[in-house]
Length: 88
Image (cartoon, rainbow, N blue to C red; front, side, top):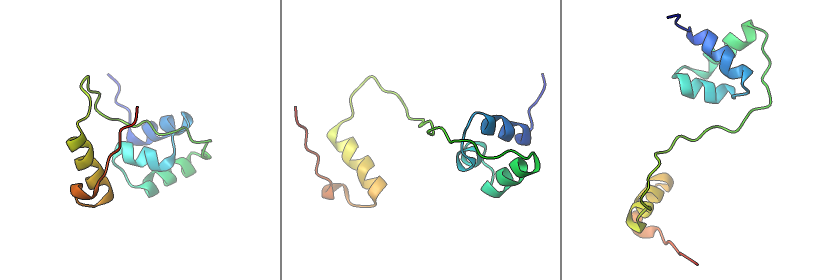
């Protein structure tokens, strides 16, 4: 089996239109490394595609308590400061 180097993978992802910062994040390397690899290969940044958001898929709905906890973590506030309104 042929192993793909990080530099090769960077070039592949760039060809798919993935942004430099998303490539760096995905591969666990510094942005500057991605920039240098693409510059050395004379690859210009393409129109970036939206980043794929990897999130766990659950068959169960999200509870209000869990939603408050996650929102509080995201915004750096106490869960008690989060108010959720459900309409429908």
